[in-house]
Amino acid sequence: MLKRRLVQTLSLLLYNADLAKFKTGAVSKSPLKNGCVPGLNCYSCPGALSSCPLGALQNALAEGRPPLLVAGILLLFAVTLGRTVCGFLCPFGLLQELLYKIPSRKLPKSPFTRSLTLVKYALLAVLVTGLPLAVFFARGYGAPFFCEFVCPAGTLEAGVPLVMAVPALRDAAGGLFLWKLCLLVLILVLSVFCFRVFCRFLCPLGAFYGLFNRLAVLGPRIREAACTRCGSCARKCGMDTLRFNDRECVRCGKCLGECPARVTAHVMGRPFFKLFKENI
Image (cartoon, rainbow, N blue to C red; front, side, top):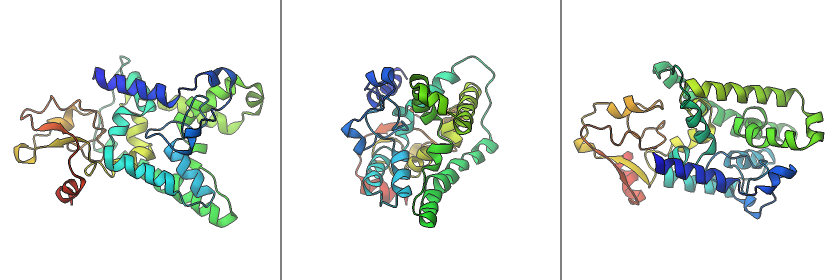
């Protein structure tokens, strides 16, 4: 757990290493913004050295450009790591985990919360891809709807720091900023009681990576022949997993020591074609 916390913290610092921009309220002009980081991290965060994959994808679709570069980068992260990105390389995931450590009554997972995980797939289909494309074809230009109306990471990393640092932005902040600020506060409060509430129910990036969990080259695997299907891994997991390494597993490794048969292990670098054959 300590090693994972270290990786999460280093990811946060590396994603937003242009620290001087936080004081001036300017947005970093790093040349690395032509690419994107694996986790959710807003392009407009003053210190951000690279782009957010969701934001880059939406902007390309809204402008009618084929998102070849960002799609290639996303697929590379997905087939290499799957939702390991969520468990190790997402700053907003780290924040939610830290908030969950605050002593309080915790909301248990259930079949209902499992059903709510489908919301993030709807957001991926509608706000991230469908609407930007539909509006572009209707009027010649679209908008990054998820970033503009939902993304709490963008509000926390970009909206709040920029509004605090730039008086003109404070004066211009209106109903949309207030809506996103209220949504951010709600998600942060719920994170105290519900484990990774945004990751589980609302994050389209996690939804995309989850589709590749069973195929991803690097990460944990079950020795299927030894597994007794006792379900202890899923019961110990804070996410809405039904079994080890399914689409909701963020591959944090917390359950690796919980298995009574010790059938789970981290297997690194297995050939992709072999993984594909095992999972079709």
